[in-house]
Amino acid sequence: MSLNLRLERALARLDAYYEAELKVLQGQSYQIGSRTMTRAHLAEIRVAIRDLEIRVADLKAQAAGRGKRKAFRITPRDL
Image 1 (tube, rainbow, N blue to C red):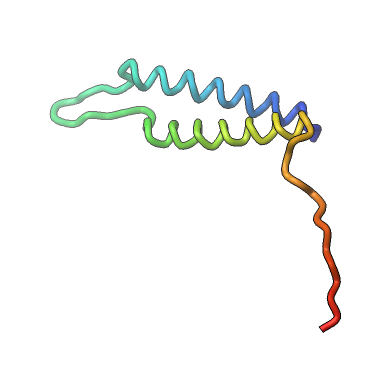
Image 2: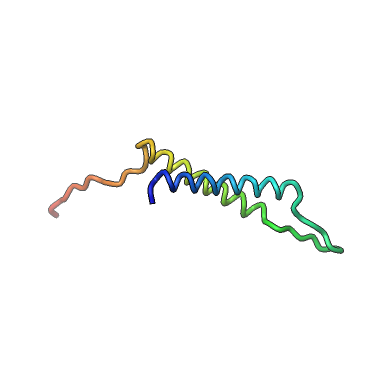
């Protein structure tokens, strides 16, 4: 999978999680008697948002040529 495609998919998922967070914040829960039900957990959504933001930043850095190194220099030693 190409880097641009992975970046586009990560951005689309991040947008979806932002929308989900807004829906939960607007009151996507209901109450039946003394029990309150929530359709989605805000804490889980926020963890996913944080992970995706890091992933998007890494992908953007790789696209700009500033990503993590893939090769390392090794100096052999004779002990």
